[in-house]
Structure formats: structure tokens, C-alpha cells
Picture 1 (tube, helix red, strand yellow):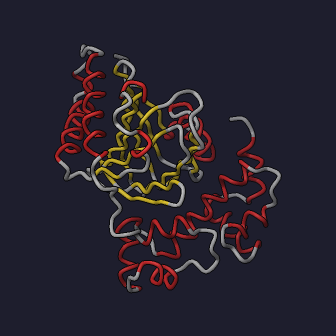
Picture 2: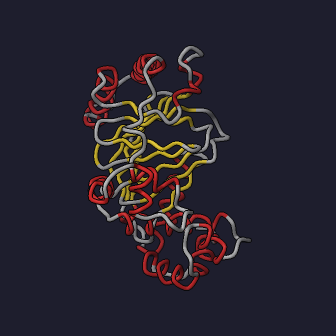
Length: 306
């Protein structure tokens, strides 16, 4: 069993924190990219029990995206302790709160939208250890509700291990095998359970899938979900702490920040229009307010080795 490793943005100058956090996330979870604002407050602690990894991530509002892990194949279970996670994969979106578990297959693409004041435990289990009988292909993007007794059992194990980690220095690596067994139990049970999607799709999840629609707003959200304007507003405040307009603008800007670095040959105007902005100058003003720098400066700084 390894010692617990700790990483925090607090020791880094504010203007470089987003770059530091991006590097930490990429090293801890191969194939993953973190999109976060300058000055982000975030920390990661990780622990290995044999081949199984257990990490705790605490973060302000951000997003992570993965195109696929080419260095291995793991199943990741995200146990939510505070805030909410919304996972997008293909055309689907699912959101989980405290006590719920979101499942991701790191060989497949997905994105996770992270709420403010977020805390999550991440269990990383090599897929090869789970065997062939659990239906890995059907688990990606699953929400395992915290009230399910099998999920609650795994939650209890993970929380107990993490909260007592300082007292467990002599625990045998065989504990990792117990976590594999518990994960296999939960996955087999979920294979026959109906796919969980709260309602059909929450207003927040719908917004995340339609950021490129310039008409996206309260009216279109009401039309898509069948909810009243007041219900849509309450859903956004409950899940994100923001109004629909503020949340949509914030997520468009965060996606733009990622694309500016990932696609250096693409013009700033093209990125802005692809994300639902109708005016390049307005986009640049919003971007500077959000990140403290212009889109072009962000592109140069983000592409520079950190």
C-alpha cells in the first residue's frame, strides 16, 4: 500500500493555477484534460491499494474531458460527497448528487461538469480485474443511486477507508482486492437494473448538450423539458448556484478556453460562433471578464509548456 500523495493549487501563483491543475489531472488520470479558470482552488489526494487507486478531488467549478486512456483500461467510480457531477457521453447526460456514484470507462470519451464547492472520491479499478461477466460496455455513463443498498455498501467501504487512512498505514494490499470484489458485486447488480436517468433529462444536462445553440436560454429549456420558467430557474440554482443565462455563458467560455488550446489553427471567431456567441467582440469581453486575459493571450499561454 502506498503513502497518500497530496497536490494543491494553493501553493501556485494564481495566474498559473489552471495550468498546474491541468498537469496534475492529466498525470493522475491519463487521457483527461481539466478546463478551469485562472486562480482555481483545487486539490487532489491519491492512494494506491495494490493495483486499485483511490483519490479525493476537491474543486471549485470546472470541467474535465477525456478522449480515451491509451495507457490502460480502468473503470472509474465517482462517489459524490459534496456538490454535483454531470457526465456527458455521446448524446446522453446524467447528473449525480451526494451519495450517488457515476461510472466511467476510461477507454471511452466523456466529459464531466463539476459544480462549485465539489468533493468527490474516485475509485479506479483495472478492467481486467473485474472479469468478463459484468458487462463493462453497459456501465459507462451509469448513475448508481445512493439509496441502492449495494451502492450504499460500497460507499460505506470507500468512505471508511478514506476517512481512516491516517490510521491504516499497515493495511495489507489485499484491501484492494476487497474493493475489486465490492465493485464487481455492484456492477453485476447494476447490469440487470434499468438505466437510471432522472426524469428524462434535467435542464442543466440539456443545456450542457446544446451549448452551440445560439437560441439556448430559459425559453428553449422550458420547451425541451416541459418545465415552467420558474422550475427551470430553480433547477439551475439548485444544481449550479447560477441562473440559466449565467451558467450557459460560463460553460460556453470554459469550453472555448479548452478549444483555444486544443485547436490552435481554428480562429477565435469560429470557436465563438460554434459555441453559440453571435458577436466576436462580445465573446472576447466575456472571456476577459471570466479568465482575466484575452482569448489570444490564453491560447499562447495555455499552449506554452508549464
